[in-house]
Amino acid sequence: MASSELISTMSTTDLVPLLDSDESLYMIDVREPDEVTEWQIPGVHNIPLASLESRIGELPRDGHLVVICAAGTRAEQGAQILASHRIPSSVLAGGMRSWASTYDVVTGGFGGATVVQVRRRGKGCLSYVIGSGTTCVVIDPSLEVERYGQIAAEHRWTITHVLDTHLHADHISGARELVATSGAALWLNPSDPFAFDFEPLADGRIIDLAPGVQLSVSAVSVPGHTEGSTMYQLGDSAIFTGDTLFLESVGRPDLADQAEPFAHNLYRSLHERILPLRDEIMVFPAHYGPGVPVRSGQFVASPLGSLRTSLKALTLSEGDFVAWAIANVKDRPPNYQRMVLINAGRARVDAEAAEMELGPNRCAIA
Image (tube, rainbow, N blue to C red; front, side):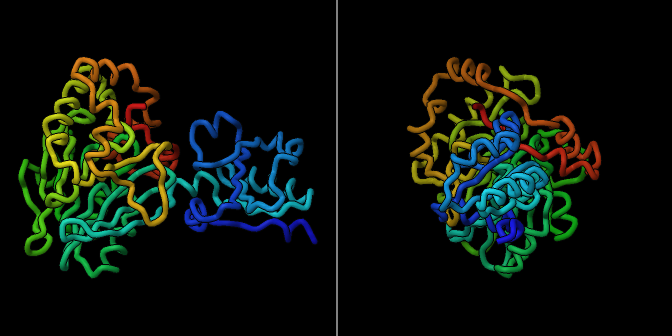
């Protein structure tokens, strides 16, 4: 068999369903260790390209091998090395660059509405389309806005409102572009420094999706991660917490260089606006970190009652919480200052936008 017949190509979209269904999947990331430590697909085995030849004996001969690198070139070279040992493999097309823009969705019913969770797998970004009857709203859209239009069309919904939970620092918001293409209303919190036209939010504002189905602005004032952090509540069934509360931690308070006062604000936001809610309400965050399992067909979400006991941060006193938050913030998102300017409307989206977004999100306290 020719070596070329031992090498195939796999798209990142094809990889997603295999991550939790193919027990023979064996992913080899041939980048250098510091690159992999910085950002990786969960479950990879890091064997740098220069070491691959000498470590062939470590590889399973009956596995489904997928070779990964930053953009594809080193993975191709790695696959050639495997082929020279008669080991078949697939090269992940576009590598981590393509992984950054790989999505899947999960759909389910809450509070009389249909919730579609859009997961940007390479960034850990979560956005939502919430619809009932003939209308829907979109929360925290990423820049590839055609996805939200497709979801709305599949459900025969009209997008009436586009909402962001806060001024994002780790990725470029698609809110303004989605408004431009859909004709929807843009609702934002004026406490964040947006420099373009939008409908200012206030506590208690309601979007009627269908008779008896309401999405409410449950807390327009949950400062801590940003001054304008906002939450949206779907009846008594679900709350969309943005970067205020995650499944594995809480939002970092240091991105505006006011870590201590923002940490105090964050504590009060958590204890006055979220924790009084009932245990059964489902928490839908705007991000997830590498320690959160992501499985096809299952929401990245948790009942609030489970988070009360699993997250140590929610059990601390205010003083201890502030000290913990300040001590545990680590590397800030790459290019976050530039992305804040873009999302605030104070800088243009340019050809470098996709490059700026590469890498994981770093919006939670580690």
